[in-house]
Length: 271
Picture 1 (tube, rainbow, N blue to C red):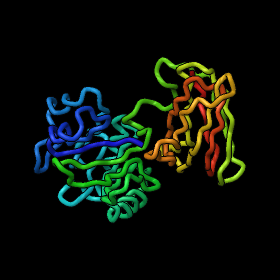
Picture 2 (picture 1 turned 30 degrees about the vertical axis):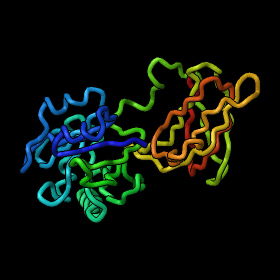
Picture 3 (picture 1 turned 180 degrees about the horizontal axis):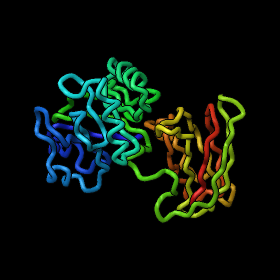
Picture 4 (picture 1 turned 45 degrees about the vertical axis):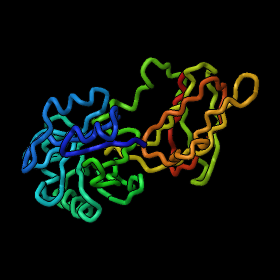
């Protein structure tokens, strides 16, 4: 998972992180001035998530559903408008208590569900099942909010169906778990410095997957000795996947991957 910052004032994000990977800002106005082109240009290397406050604004990735902004009943119409405009993955931002009302509005109006960015304010970097992102820290110094985001965000990230740039896709393996408990699959790799695997949970039509878990990855070199790179060696490693994730295994010729999953998934072998 990844970290994303949002703020009413774009410069506040730079006070926290000079080179953020993901930023979000407003592009229309009800009360506060939206980000300018100069504000967005402060983040040349970041993926940019554009938020609108008004359900009449036919733009952006996200509609902000909260008091004094859009209402839950307006969210389905905005999502349909964005889809008709060619944006296939509209996102609704709301808090936990409003989320059931938004879901009910989509069901009542017969509109396909959107993606969800949920304000949990839990202090924990965890994404609720059925969401693509969670705003888990609110009103942090110096005037920012912090979210945790899935490894792949449809409509924001480029397509997950391709391998990493300039890396050869050697093989795609379909893994069918024998059960939902902990299992292990062995994969063969190239042994090159670019050797890696990409674990791809099954993503549904709304761009969301059921969570799965990847634990220890024991990687071995041509001399039958371990080459390291076990993600579980990182004390901050989050083993829960809700979208695809790349694991670099330079020098590995095979690896045993521990996982838990309730449904089949793919592993891309690259290198």
